[in-house]
Image (tube, rainbow, N blue to C red; front, side, top):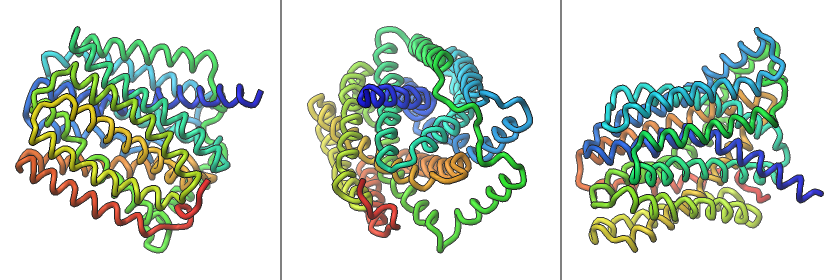
Amino acid sequence: MKSEKNFFKFGRFLLLGFVSGIPYFWISITLPLCVASQTVHSEYFKGLSLLFFPYVLKPFFASILYYLSTSIIHRYFFKYTVLAVQTIIIFAFYQSSQCMSPLQFEVLWIWGCVIACFGAIQDIILEGYRINVSKPQISSTQNLLGNQTGFRLAGLFVSSGALGISHYGSWKLASYVIIGAISIAMLLIGVNSPFPRELFTKEQESSSYWASLKKELKDFFSWNRFPLVLLIHLFAYKMIDAFIRWMLPLFLYGQGYSNIELMYADKGLGWGSVLLGGFVAHKALQRIPLKWALLAWGIAQTIADSTCLFQWYLGKHMGLLFFNSFLHQMLSGVGNLLIWVYISDYCRSSHTMMRYSIISAWFTLDRLCVTWCASLVYGRTHFLTFLALGMLFSALSAMTFLYSQKVMNRTL
């Protein structure tokens, strides 16, 4: 009976992760792949990096959600807000599909911005729910594993799936398939919603909410408080995880790989490796503290980045591509679960939505800065210089995990 309950609970968070992942991976993977397959200009990638900015505005979106939930009938507000947001995302997906092939970058960017805005709103609700119902740390990690599995499956679907469909059909057809998947997810959420009836529970009084928001923001940048250490670690994580990987689609297309080859290797085997990495991280946290797990991951990721040198030297080589995909994506899965355990532990409070929106906004701002800088460096230097700088930044970032707080010094 207990195992059956855990199975359905895992499935619930897998669904929520899948729904949350589609808009994010559309911005971070599918659009870069679509653009890179039709142009070699890194300038477009600087524009694409700005699409992460709506995720930086999560505190602003959270305040709007709070206002709406307290000024209108808020019974089942949680559920119907998600459904309304997904409807808008579907419409934006449809509009963006009309300008993907041939590429109309400016129009595609505008609809991508709409998807990012409402994807950020959806994240606030879904992640706030997960953190609220995951009070014990062991439960938090189990729920997070289900959530991240769904999140990464969404990444597999909108990257490897889109590559395969675009190879045999078109990018427009790939968009239609993704729209169908979101529609099915909406149906499942509408029929059997796991959400509570109210979005905000302990933040219902306006004075209390805004006073708490002011205090959270004040503490957020305090030198003597825990959040500042967390901010440093989040930036370090993004530098390790995103600086080199952001430009890999452009590099791999430049090496002569086709959509179907990337689908099987970089986005097929690779995404399966991500799920393996999440499982490895889950088991590792039962034996070693989070601090040492993050440090080991940072060092391993820095060393693994050196395999890109062989990719550059040998040129197009499918065996090496498969190996690199397996290694990099597995380490990505490890790091992703570790950092979200860290974030979730900090966000768990009487103001979960507020904390999550603030910390998530900072996390995305880190990614925006890192990817924009990576695009700039890649376009102005030789690939070997870009790779050397990326590995240097990664190594320095990994060392920041040596300085930790109590939350990082305990195992599950």
